[in-house]
Length: 236
Image (cartoon, rainbow, N blue to C red; front, side):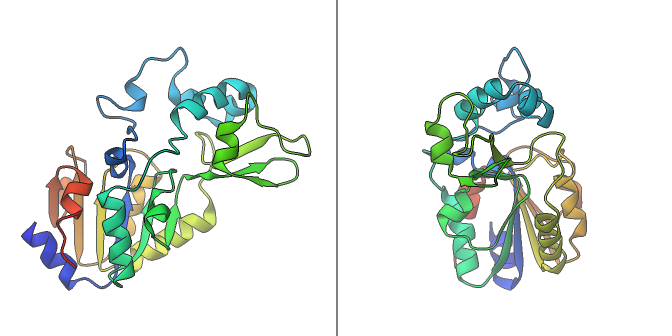
């Protein structure tokens, strides 16, 4: 923790790159750990149900799963989200790059957030492009329909869909210009998101994760533990 504090004190352009492990302390399960979403038993695998093809071929089944597992609208920002927002407010952090779709970074007060996999908080009619909130999707029954009759699709990146190019470009620019990159709560096994770390050319690469990752040996500092518990100890 002393080394982490020294790194933060020295840094002026921190970028935070986070995955599902950042939100587990808010009560949102991750995907690949022992008690993660993908380890639970389903007739159809979560990877299949969260795919582009399944959304359009089994739309009602998709939304049944999506409402139950992907819309934790009760969740509140934890210590990790709050500390990251504070780092930005103090002028230490220039951007958040997240694989999460829960919107908790913004809820904590972060302003510059690149959501690689989209967000549950925006949902768009595929016909007329009218937008709907996550609360409206959660309250709807069956297949959510727009006032024009069109299908409403969550603005999340499903399996088989490309990442948004504008979001990708912004994330890459931020990481490439950072003097410190803090990677947290991610297994670094899901591509293309995991490949974003390769754009970092700064001074300090810090990894915070509960379990070991393929990047551990390449980092300047590795801390194994809960992201919120570790980040909350940083003094500003």
